[in-house]
Length: 147
Image (tube, rainbow, N blue to C red; front, side):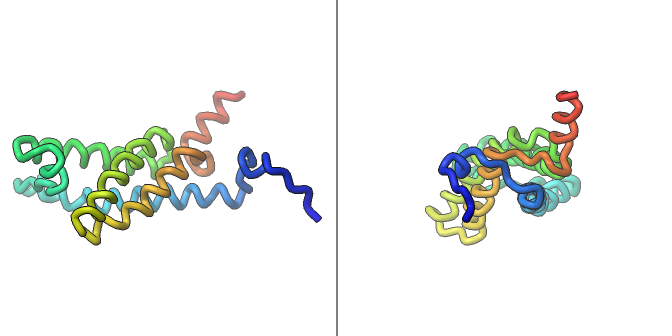
């Protein structure tokens, strides 16, 4: 029988194989961000900038296009950082904030496409709490700093 301690639930490190799950979570969140950002960048390049309805509801119509593209820039940079595994916990803070707002808005306004954001919120929380040192620049930089 295994010697089980309650402290192992709180402070145990994931197995080496389990750490690859964090890599998958990074890629999933990055894929969702890029999937929503690429059409906005294409529309801007074509001279038809898009305005996000949720941004309009939260901040009003006067700044909707600039704020839409500011948030799109943050998402794009965050997705690239997640793919590279750079500043994973910092990027996850943005993900937690964004997915909490968009997921709640999806429920409140009955927008089914935004309800998936609760799953992305859970993934961002996992990355915020655990980081993702495997297959990442964060892990590489921490190994160099410890030498």
